[in-house]
Image 1 (cartoon, helix red, strand yellow):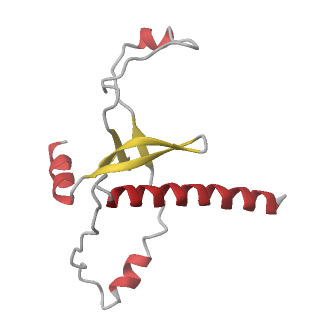
Image 2 (tube, rainbow, N blue to C red; image 1 turned 30 degrees about the vertical axis):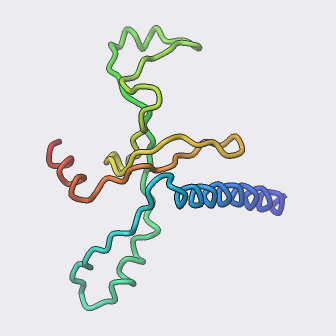
Length: 138
């Protein structure tokens, strides 16, 4: 049973790797722009190696959310919802979806489907200065 789950997980990982490789090949042929990692100066540490310092936070879980849109409705409307009800959102069809980490916008992207599983292809990364500007507005 455990080997079956491992085989399934490996197959899914291979499918995503193939999709990412296809995206990379399409990107080099004039598709979506390639993103270069931004080097930022390491904060002063207490004498430790900066690489070791960052290793301490790499496994901290964060909540990643992809937001289709938002709307405000009265409670009486919520109570009338039933299976098959349609809730209108403020986003337009085809508009990029917001990618949030712990509630903060970090990127926008488009939906992709690989083997009946949804994913999101990032199309625009919010710069650190833009993130700070947005945080200071709220």
